[in-house]
Image 1: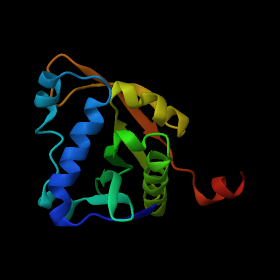
Image 2: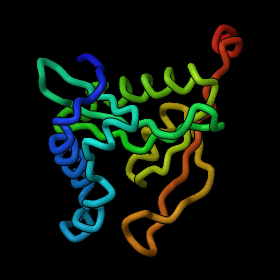
Image 3: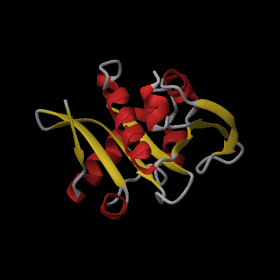
Length: 159
């Protein structure tokens, strides 16, 4: 497995992967349809955001999108999706670790508006729940708000 920046022509592939990954959790077609716009990756997304792909032998296993300005106190992990057949192989952890390294390089933390099914993963990675936020796609739905304080270099060396 290797991590690399996404290319603009991979936008449709990443969108399909995001929708499959979301559907893995048992959401019905109407829910997936409601999320489609929010989960659409465009060439502009790839040009403006840090879109990282995890691939193996040219096959995309997952991707993440880290957004925000380094001058902020946090960067937002906007998306982290893994191909359903690859869940449990360390793809999510590799993408997470890459996001942590990028945030640490800017000296900021990470904010995640998590899907409820992904909350356990983010907790395993060291993030904490900090309330709830309204869904961007489904009226009346609330999602966990997760935060991760990236250790400073002195904290990391103390471990």
